[in-house]
Image (tube, rainbow, N blue to C red; front, top):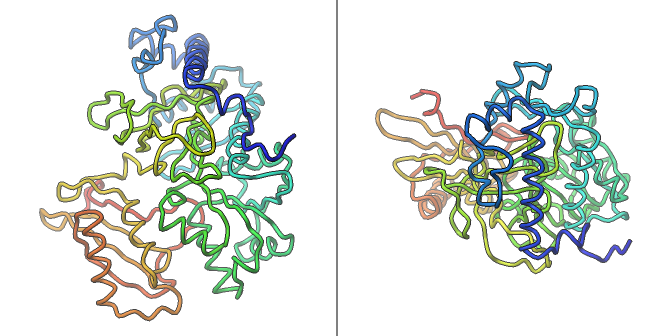
Length: 447
């Protein structure tokens, strides 16, 4: 295999748009019919909507197909066959993999996969890792807890598929992981942006190491939360490790559907040969096909057969771009990646607020640490935003000066005012997997 070729699958990744559309329509019609004929849940859903497989004649027709939400998947799990329910399209004895969602937004969703599905997962990941420069010469360290949450499991198998040396660091604590990476001279790793920064902090302040010079990491793939496409956060990670940091996005129920390539265009490629990504207006539900208008991602995994993901309402806020990437892929770009989640993007004093905007401001200011916390609540009849930030280790910055700078930059970026609390280093909560730094107490009736 020619390692200089930037594409894992040159044919699919450079397919002309019209051919790509033909492929996606063919695959959608196939998975739609498969689910209609084999899943009681899907057949009832589609019959209630008055739609049948033969009604799908164009990509525009796909918008007529009802969406599936995570709450529906949780309800399905209460039905037979246990534990997956009647969305399952294969006999139980063909299920070879069990995974579940992290449960950060409620009761976990169980995901069934066949051996064929798991090969598909690995192919999705191999596509994105090759695009980010992973090659057989890499020694990839995976510092995540190997358990029932899908996390980087498919990334592990994709590394093996590519031919990388794959090092699982599951049961080790953070210090031990760092020392093992140094000992074996690992060249790449995969984890959340929070843990990338947390490991750098531990290496620097607990072990006296400089990750950029004492560890040989050349590339880092992030997933699980925003950050790797937030400019200030990406810059912090790359400077701390002396490595290229790449974003990737996926979900247990969906698969690995989007990735940043080695050219780092500030956007995600949608893996359009394997997924049909559609964007809907957040208020009207109308399709958004053109560039520049954010909306809610509704996505279909075109090749997943055991528990199909058809028109899944991801709650992710994204937008399309018509820009062409210099890497040569014909897949559409989503600038800024996942901008936020419909659950988190909220109105405060009548202004739409995206938590990622706050993160970009906080992480762009020298002297501030990596951790912060945002609390939105009602005080009387008025919305109030509290922002807690940490100083960096050893930073000595006058509190009034830091508060003034934060207030000004946040006002410019978000058009809102904040109560700001400056905390000393190490006092705010730390996270290893998915961080929950944004708390809207108004949603829970707390005032």
